[in-house]
Length: 262
Figure (cartoon, one colour):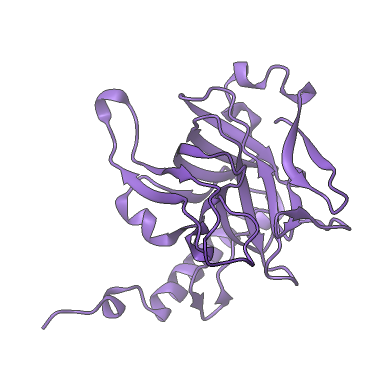
């Protein structure tokens, strides 16, 4: 007899035990009083099963012609490259022929899945004690967004920030201040802005919505929360605070949102 996927998956009580261990570890280290003792891992792509906790989607849901995949790439010890995910495909602006209600197309994205419930309730990521979101990536230079979803009153709200790569084609560490994320809904900035619920983060992901036709390719090794700006190479920090770039996000008046590049 062959075991089913449901039987092999980690059960409710096993997840609850893991959550109990995590909460106990926080209490024993007094992190609630002293603050975090180091970076907090949010998602790693070092192993193949890391993709089981992610979802990739694109405009095929509305009949679009873009293509997207999230694949696992094994480590390459000779090149000193760890296992990582490859988010790649091709963007097309072609509108579906039989969908007159669809006025725009051309996007692709992936995100981490919501964690299953435990005896303690829904498992959420608490990054309230951290200043930065850290990402280890190799970008092709396209205009990607980092998306953070929380337990918001409006479930479709996202907090977004441009993923500014300074060295396309090379591995680099990017830090983004949590306070610099912008609340959006349906691709537009929401007014008034409200602070991110940093104690109740549901998922993190990346999207490409610039609607520029052609291939895209982004490698992601891991994502974490940190307070240590020294994790970024010195050459990538010099002058970053003064540089301002315009993003694709607009408010309801059509004005573009500018970010200080971090």
